[in-house]
Image (cartoon, rainbow, N blue to C red; front, side, top):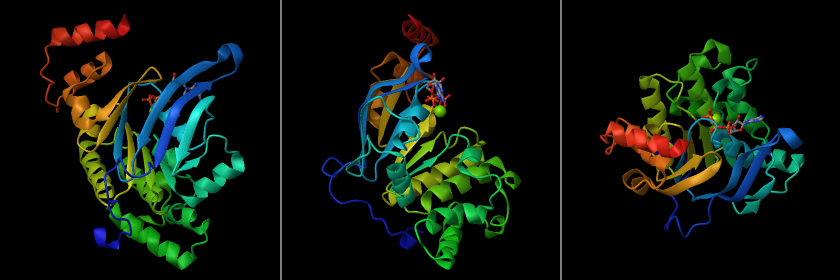
Length: 289
Ligand SMILES: Nc1ncnc2c1ncn2[C@@H]1O[C@H](COP(=O)(O)OP(=O)(O)OP(=O)(O)O)[C@@H](O)[C@H]1O
Ligand SMILES: [Mg+2]
């Protein structure tokens, strides 16, 4: 499987390579004047080439907002976003459109139905990002088929509409669509949350393969257990701010913020989950104080 892929794991240490994504001091708000609410405040993080960053946080903590800001779908009121060395913070509509067309960064939406046009066949969904780049149709179709098999789907799905697939199949098509342009960075927003355990395992396997061939991933989840097995580093958002960030091992073995400690102690598959119930209650009380 790896032989058909053109990307290699980058040489050298991650620290030495230019980050694929650098977010610094990012503020994002929704609504105007009195209805204004800050969703992100002073968030900074980087993703190195080929690195997998797990972005975790409770519901409403700003995870999808961060993803949307990086894709230019919501505007930041302060801070900067640098993608592949290019400062995109002040980009206008046209520049964003061009950047998206180049397919350097791709986004798998939290709801797979949003990643796929309901009126467009799976084949057209998969070939469209390539056709806008000027790839000839026969080549685009070939590529669509090869990516479909990479996400373990059968070619006979190509003629169907998204509504004619199961949730797990749809999510895999959304992942395949994000991959066809061979992006340097893929942001996956809760890619496994809505799936049953068999589909979840398959998607995680596919993500591990991507990671192995050097695609940088931002894996958004509220479930530390799903992220723990795949992330090199973990960043924790809490109420719109970065509560902590570090290597996956550091964050899981030495969580600093009460919210992270609560997550670690509540994740059934992680060591440390044996923390006493009284301790978890204490952490919850500290968070709500
Ligand atoms: N379009 C919008 N207009 C107004 N407020 C919004 C909008 N989108 C998100 N918000 C608010 O911004 C905050 C962060 O939302 P966001 O969707 O980024 O959270 P999240 O961490 O992705 O949550 P979840 O785990 O539920 O997906 C929340 O308070 C949310 O209500
Ligand atoms: Mg979200």
